[in-house]
Amino acid sequence: MKGLSLSKGQFFSYVTAVLLSVFFVVAGVFGASTVGPNISTGGTLTVDGASTLTGNVAMSGTLKVTGILNASSTGLFDGDFVVGKTATVTASTGNLAVKGTLSASSTLVVSGQSFIYGNANFNGNATVTASTGDLAIKGSLNASSTLVVTGISSHYGDLKVNGFATTSSSNGSIATNGNINATGTLVVTGISTLYSDLRINGFATTSSSNGNILTNGSIGIASTSPVTALGVTGTTTSSAGIRIGGTGSPINHLVHGICNIPSTTTVATTSISITCTPSASFLGVEPSHRIFMSATGTFATRFAIIGASSTAADVIQITIINLDSQGGLRTTGDVGLNFMGIK
View 1: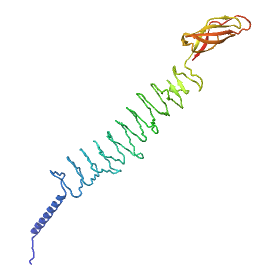
View 2 (view 1 turned 90 degrees about the horizontal axis):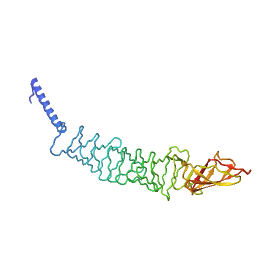
View 3 (view 1 turned 30 degrees about the horizontal axis):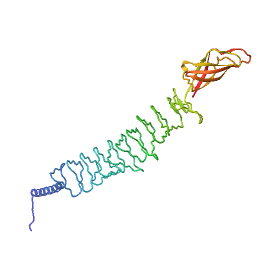
View 4 (view 1 turned 90 degrees about the vertical axis):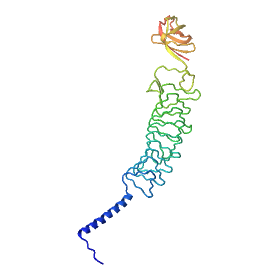
């Protein structure tokens, strides 16, 4: 075998040719597994193994995944995101943010917290567990039909009911730390217990058969600071009467004032009947009133009032006696007497 002899120029030519051949082979292999910034295909793109995308994936059509789709970053869907089976996010870092509508044809189970910044519309039932499930709403909760709450419902804002609010008689209570405002009629068929003030700007009506208002504090009428059990500012009218104490007949009407008698002269130990006319500002005496009289400081001495009654509207008939035992005449003078009529 003959020896191969190359000149220096031929040697560098062969080396250059070999290096170029290796470069083109490596570039061809690398180009088969790494593509440029865009992939455009008019058909189907199928990846048999794992596909890792460090950028964004934009799709105008449908993305179907028969296995598991793991997204370590944010997935943005401008159209519908349809999940045929289970969609799971990790409790520590996974969030599912929906700007459109989240529709669940069967049961939607949320084991952690769900934040909704728009409206949550439920066409069926929305259930939270009694031990750990809370439904916190910063806006409005609107129920077009019946809203059933089997546990405690805490409202830190206003609770507005346009229809009926019903609680069961055995265990249903409505406890409020604020105000209950009723623009219409507030009907309470059972017992209503108030630990604070009950303020009524309109009418408060209880049924005549079984309606009672019981209070451990004070009731103020036209007064926000009553000093007694019942504090009334202004004139009080009671159509059914008033009873003080537990027995006796109720007082249905009370009138009092001053009536005037003319100067009258009588002899000692003699009684006389005279008319005492109420002043114009103290009218209202009727024959059905029981009349009680008392003398003023201007009533003459040694006279006593021994009887009084009303014989007509605004007419009081009294009987006085001269108690002078000396046998002389005595005159009453034109004086005013205190009276009170009760029926």
